[in-house]
Length: 335
Image: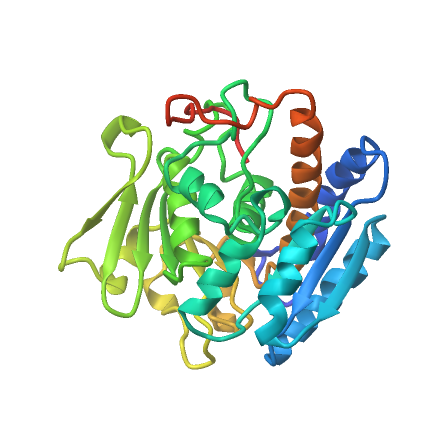
């Protein structure tokens, strides 16, 4: 782990770059198994400066690691047609869109325009449904793994790297015994992340402006997928002291996680572009991850390889990715 010399001896500051390098080894191995460099097409219709930075970062990471990348800048009124054309273009292996575009529910519509077989972000309905229902494969033969949203999956990969996941336990149960607070309940990151962690066995408190919800598979992990419960007595103030992992992603410079409420030795992860933790977090946390962006980009490449492999595995097996009797089988392996 990369440690910051300014941090107290009892706190490890783990940088995303080191974790990303580990994952790039896996990506490089996967790249050797495909016949040509996969082509990722990114659509930029947003005026958000952060979207431009993310697009440039994506392109650079793709090219540095043997992938092809095309950035297509189109007016937002023409975006849907441009995506449909890419869906029908056999040379395009994966598609991503840089949000926000309209800043309304229309962005959700655009997400569903991307073909599921080219959706590297895991935002189309089928992937989202599988994620929430803890279904890990697209087919009952367990050839094709489902794709998970990049930022939530990046947090999962960081927790695996930090050995918060207990590899002695079977897949799907490896967070059993952990209490985690996720501060952010956006539909893109916060809620999916809470669901993923709960489906892997954690008791998760999801904090939003209005309330706190609990995501859990119940005592003894008896449920196959997480349930969501509300209790007006739950607050950030009384849930933080219970949590051995705290993950925050509030997109604003005014919010800070109250350090004095953190459990001694907690693992703290920031996924916002803003710093949700003051420097004093190093006095309380055992591990602090200040940013995750570099891991998110590598997870994007990993997802791209997965959908290329899924397409390869279903060739000659047309029934492989088809549901049977309206159901998809509950699967064991992890993301």
